[in-house]
Structure formats: structure tokens, C-alpha cells
Length: 109
Length: 113
Image (cartoon, rainbow over all chains, first blue to last red; front, side):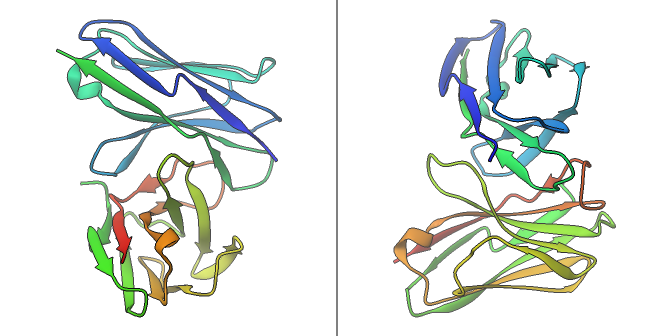
């Protein structure tokens, strides 16, 4: 069974700060997802990656397959970035996702 | 607009009630999923449908009964629920089972009295 650990569990930042959220997993995977969940409950897929690095606007996601670790970075953070960020992994040929517990990010103005 | 619509957004019911959650997707996807999200716990996969066939029943109690009448609609029928079933129930869809990102609805917040 793949375990997914996220750190930190809670993160408070000031507007403009550089944010890093980490995700570690225990067994081999075929893809890793970063998701964003706003207070209303809806979840949005931010990235799906299996190697290297992806960038979208102020968001950057990286993955190190050998170290079984991924990071989500937010540059020039803004209060509207406040949300829960969830890491999820998919192993091998299995279609199932294993989710982390999420990181609650609060960005203060 | 996420493309995946869930109704109702909030539901309060007694343990003896029967209710249904509805999910509808307009993305032309062939796979649909039900997840349960309890406080401070990771999302738990409940059911998966692919081309209207159930491919996963993740040890979910029989008081939860899914139905997928066509590839655009997914229901979760609820009866004689327990207080520990109070949670956010999320529906998702993807083009096919596999690597594609899943598109989530906004969820139904369920409270059992």
C-alpha cells in the first residue's frame, strides 16, 4: 500500500512570500497529482506529472522519482491562494489514486 | 464551472431517512467516481464506474448504493446512515480509467443527525 505524507499540515504566509509544500510517497508510482481544494469543497487539478518539473503561472511542481518526493511551489503568494493543497499518487497500472491529508495554506494580506 | 455538477450541495438527514446524491458531467467522460472526505482524513475512494459498469466497490457498507444509468449521470443512494457517515461526498470524472486528471464536482456536505 502506498503511503502519501504531506508537510507541513498547516502553513501561514504573508502576501508575496514564496511557498513550498512537500509530498513524499513510499512505493513506485506512474503519476503524481497536485490538487487544490477551496473552502467550498470543490477540487481543481493543478498538475499531473511523472518526471521533472511543470509550471503554470505562479505555480511550479517538481518531482524526484528516485527520492519519491514532490514539491509544489507558489511564487508571489496571494490571499486567493488560500486553500487546501492535496498530493495524490497513482501506482503502476492501477487507476486508483492514493491521497495525502492535505496542506492548509493561509495567505494573509 | 467545473463541468461536474453535484446536487444537493448540503443535505441533513436522520438515520432512518432515504435520500440520493446526484452527479452529472457534461465533459463526455467515460469514468466516474464517488469519494468520501471526512474531517482530517484523506479522500477515500468509494465506487468507480467505467462505461456504466461498476469496476470498484471499495469495501463500502451496503447502506451506500451507487447507480450509473448512463455515462453522464451518477447517483449515490443513501439509507439508514450512521453519524460517522457525515462527510463531504465528492464526485469526479475522467476521460477513461487511468492517467488522465480527474475533474471534481463541488461536493455534497452530508450531515447525519
